[in-house]
Image (cartoon, helix red, strand yellow):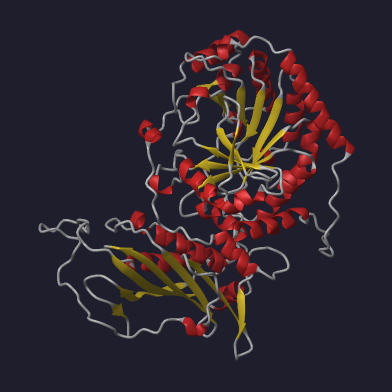
Length: 609
């Protein structure tokens, strides 16, 4: 089982994440202290008291469909210390001027008003809430509100280990940690920052301090991390985690794309194939998650089905943005500025009327395309390796002392210098292995060289048109393409020694090449979508030219070729190397982007001489 060895490796990482700076020797994990137990017992007593003394629910927080809103999410900041690819561009987003953001006193005033009317759970969000300097004080102030049962936080985990002891003492009772991959290199690729081990240390600290469960939120995206479902689920065997798989959802700047979504049913089927004994766990009526447990496992897994099976009918959530707007639906565009009314001197009753009117206008279901609710997702085959990418990387790392960004295979050359190679193989019958110089395919002419004197993507009137491949027979198609990046001596040395500030250039370029092959039809307008069964991206350092040689191969069975996928993979890997190294040198040349070979199809095979 590929998932379980990785699970054990990550559990060891969690147990040993607190290390001595001087020696690196593991420090004995401390048992939860008396203060942590006392805080937990106090929270339990508080919840029991509130259950026994619940007040009648406010009409202002009840909508026209009878839904009572008892859960408030408050965004403390728009800022974030990560740049997740599916969330924001690398340079960040325009921020609201500080004067237009809610002050701490305004946040607490609104929280006090909502709790008085029946809100019993507040979750602090962002941006990244733990980068706000006064977050501990805000939690402490919220904890004093009579009637508030739960104070939670959703965090990327980067600052969690450092702040959690203070937050727990202040009254934080629930934690959600966002983590979309268990592969350090892929983490760096997704979030464009380092920090995987800080997140894991945060999970470790939450478990150590007695939080149970520690919720881990994983947004599942086809072609990026759906191959890690089993690895995430395996973590619950020995850890008190609730791993929550979240369907990819559309936001502004994050356009809906059916190809990227992995539905709840498809994820559940994947987990059930590995663990047929998976059991459904009862959940609260207003819960957004469908919970399951593998018998004998300490934790559980959940699925948040925002798109395929929406939970609008039992929604009890309201949101206040960092600039003070009230949103009654995450997907809705309608917002009411509570900040403006608050600063204009509105009384408590006036604010309640404004809030009540907004809640009363809440729609029966969210504003995303209603047709997707009954959508039975096509199981796009794409890249679905039997051995997950995570497990392949774990295999590649076997024997490494510390599971950091994967040390690339180093092979001594006759000249006495070492050369780094990285190979990614993503198919159903291959494991990761390092590229040796002799493994590069030699190009030689082979087979008939059939070509056409007419452009196939142009119709009879000269207009661009997609070729109709509906009547073509399915055949095995393979294509190999290459590219060369001339880095220059300075950038080459940094790449060779893995000393770039941005991280491991070869790892990131390899991942980019794999990703690019899978989205070629979205980049090249008249390309057909191809369900690839195999992608391999290889990078080799050429010390004589201070260059990186890239070779990308793609395979599929279908009516159309995959040379565009191979060329796109090689080109994007080359562009990524440029991006990783441009701070060091702009004198970088991309050259020799070309097709090496293709097989299959009516026009015969091609092998470059």
